[in-house]
Amino acid sequence: MMINWKVLLGIAKTHLLTKMKSTVTAALGVTFGIGAYITLVSFMTGLNQMLDDLILNQTPHIHIYNEIEPSASQPVSIYDEFSEAWNIVHSIKPKQSQKKIHNALPVLTYLNKDNKVKGATAQVRTQIFYLSGSIELGGNLTGVNIEEEVRLSNMADYIVEGTYTDLMNNDNGILLGAGLAKKMSLKPGDRVQISTVDGNIFPLKIVGLYQSGISDIDNIQSFANIKTVQRILGEAQNYITDINIKLNDLTLAPEMAQKLEKQFNVKATDLNEANAQFETGSSIRNLITYAVSVTLLIVAGFGIYNILNMLIYEKMKDIAILKATGFSGTDVQLIFMSQAMIIGVIGGVIGLMIGYLLSRLIDQAAFETEALPTITTYPINYNPWYYVIGISFALVSTFIAGYFPSQRAKRIDPVRIIRGS
Image 1 (tube, rainbow, N blue to C red):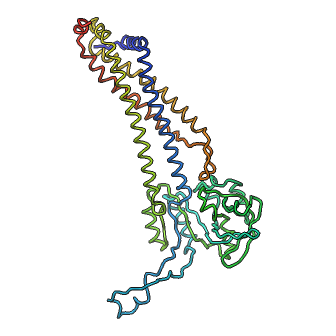
Image 2 (image 1 turned 180 degrees about the vertical axis):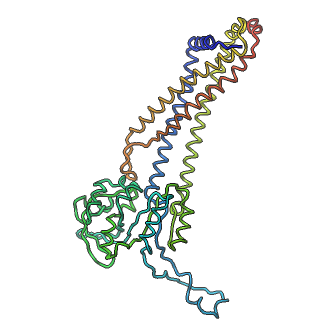
């Protein structure tokens, strides 16, 4: 039997237009459900991504360095007469070991050739004193390859004054922590003297201010070119104390860290070990986000079902007349299914538009925090998949919401309805 879609859609359109209040109410249920879903999931995942990036940007996926630790083999163990005894040694002191990584340059070359590695960069870390007039503050100076740090760790996002190229082009430049600059009343263009633990003093020009958003770091940490720090320490170009690795796939970090420890006889710490709370916190935030979002969609779906169910009760006489004039039960079902799908499409599209506009509005709202100095507005995640999921749910939910009531309409006996009226 051929289905005359033109006639069926015409009747569906007439029903929708004659009961405009019910139609608008049903469409608004879809619109606000989808709009709220888009707004919420875009905002919450944007915040989650911002918090994850705050940790990921400032923490390497794998950190290689030499660990200062007590010797595993004590002198008592070399005596045969004590080999079978239970030896207890108190107050074990750390063994004297060099800070630099052995064969660091070949290790860097090896790592950068690995296709699993996005990039590996060298650092030289040392403790210093900052001198400015009568002020003397202890802190850390890290020598970096600033171009690689910007590429791998988005370091440019944390430079609040000056630019990274200013440091790159100045062999006597220093990127001073914002907390240090405030304490010593210094600004870019000024000079600060630093003193090594051996008492050697070097003047450096402040080319910019660095603000991580963590005050404990900003009060002690500064950066200079790696060659500058090597020169201050009187060390050769192969003197490297730390290697930071960023991977293409973060999940490979624990396994690769264990492999590198054994391969190069160094300490290799992966991101999950350095920030044990990171993975748990990120997973819980994402779980809450998607749980709330799905709940919104389900609530919207029940609202649509109830509205369409009531619409069919209101149309009982129309259904009886349609069947009495020759329309089959399937025709009646398709008419109400068409109404549901029209409501779903219109409500879903408008919902996507409202969700996008609200997301844009939030994206323009001022957001200022010392923890994120370069972020001035609330973060929004404009992932197109959220919009695909939103419109898909609108269509699926209206299809289901229309299917069950239309099944009831399909089985209605027109004689009983007409007699009852």
